[in-house]
Image (cartoon, rainbow, N blue to C red; front, side, top):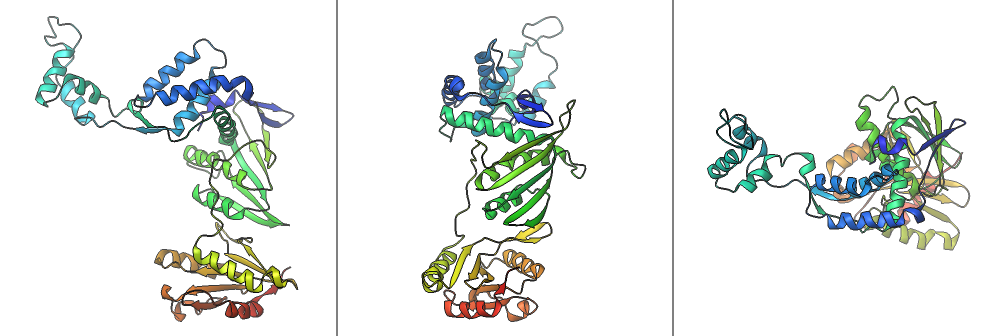
Length: 404
């Protein structure tokens, strides 16, 4: 992610609205292509050498922050690996420095030069002076080596990611963020949980409104770490078809401002969407149910993860929402995973939800006894190989309710 210095110069505030000044892709395409080629050629070299190469490229250009920003995006995409020295660097430095001061040339008070001491240490460890020189500071951050460049960048992709990183960076200075969303609930909540963000959610017509505490919120203590997670979350919004975002921004020495984005923003997410189904069991159930009782008979409509149950600091997203043509609907959750921790969390959410219109379809080999489920407000159906659609339909007739 970009540093604050690389972001501030691209921010503009007018009439209380904050905008990000982007760069012209046509103007910067040649520079972006050159940086990509330079980065690819840099494999096997140190981060210090990469930084030196970038400063040489910048020279006396005035747009040096843009070049550094593009270079930072490239560097963050690379795989940097610490070298494996012949001796632990801290041990080597201790054994070398206790020999006392050493200089390039001998004098009356320093009979051994630096090269002499390096050679002595190399002999003692049965290695070469060059290996000692390499190992001496091998544990410093700028000595890591670029060992892989897994992303095949194009100039257009690099510039697009740079623009996304600028937008991300704005959120370093956010006190509060309000998001409204109308679809793609699973991706949104999945990344919200992944980045461990604090939120309050409220159902609204056709979706949800979610308020997040930002990095400079008075309720946030680990500001730097949380701020990076908060900003890193932004690409998740671009997986949603319909959404709006509003953030209160406070830059040091500048008036408060509002930063707004929505689905029309020309930004691209590099996050992966969740697969439509988490398991083959869910997919097979959906296909069989739709064939027997779905749209073809205009009876029941099955939707995948279309409703979110808010549970304080977490959520539950049932696998399916099933709606009858008369307006009744029910929720279905398939429990086919046996890990004890998963089951414990799943049942805790079901109890917290307290939904009588929720139907649990439980795989027999999960080995959940009736005693462990007797306090659930939901209906439970066990299945041996796959859910029995006839039994599910009967449960739907018993549990489906008319939505408010």
